[in-house]
Length: 299
Length: 272
Image (tube, rainbow over all chains, first blue to last red; front, side, top):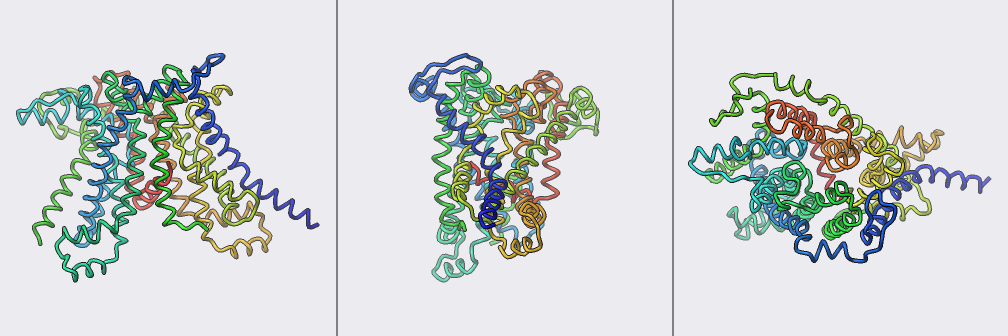
């Protein structure tokens, strides 16, 4: 009877947790292993066989100045987007946090407005941006024209295109950061400000540096990592607006994975690009879990 | 004291105007006639509300089909994600078994893996089974949601074990406990996860671009691009009307359930 019962319990555990574990291994961990192996081959989709090429794919991505542009563009995009999106998110959050005390309804409306781009379908919004940024008929260049300035070709100027895409990326992500900062601001106990005032920090600037900024530390770190990993993942705007162009000036890692892998079918090369992308994301995500570990208590 | 407050308010309004600009311009263009769009002068608002662009968007493209595809794919993904994740999360939180820490460790490790990393092998696997360019290709890769497993496990872990013991005494099987007691009690987590999942997959372009080639299987973002590329840019009004119709479900959903949307999407930051 006893053995019977423990067998039955074990079977129940297997039925509850087994299927999820199996699909998780099959759809996540097995593919990660395969892509790591493929990155050392010259495999092409549909080919009958492949050759081991050692680190050749990685050398082409990291060492060759021409092949390196996807990585360089991704890092450039991230370097523009991360600081701008975080500081704007913080500024908006501080503004709204102050406004909530006097005009709670208005603050709620503005919060919804700032968050709207996070929920909206980015591809469709990118098509709208394309109209706004159109060299001759676009709203931006018409406004510049009315002011007597000649507007640039925002999406087909090689020096400008990554900045334009980064601006759209910032537009899209500020609301997300704002929401996290608002939660962080709401969690700061008011008596800390009273204590700071007693110590002589009563101007807004002093209050910010003595209380607000230190208390937001963990939130800021979390926001930084989330903003960074989503900046590394930039794809939708590139695929919609530039396809990596002009002349690869906006070629980024995930778009390069798509093009090399699924347009040119160079699976080996695309796998190496994937591993480089993965390493970049992993570096930042590991940092995030270090932070969470100190705050979330697992049972 | 008043001046800084006024300044910050003004800056907030200007920022909000910039954020709204593409939405506003999209809606404005969607009501404009071609001769209003292609003029050198700037009209911020159409002369009259014209619905022709919407009629054109619906009749000249398969927009309704794209919206339907998006619905099927999002619903399919969410149902399978829940079917796999919820029982597993319950076992991890409320039962003791060998390998429990290992499974939870795998979930945490899985959170570190962005979907893009698995794309090439998943494509190979689906191609082997002849599933490329099917609904299955759009749904299957996402059914193992480690994020869902994590979220539900955290929700179940704070529920009192006595509750489930009482249900067992009443003769309920473990699966009945999962779906009739644990899952309804975890409704806030389920809502957050559901919104996260639907928003992510409705808006996704990367995988539909890879997994499908026939326009009949296009999800809304993919469909918008088919439309734009075919019209080669001289049909701005209908294109903008189509964009409005694609964005509308998410925007309306967000405006109606702001708190739940923000919680769901913000929680998504836990995923790599």
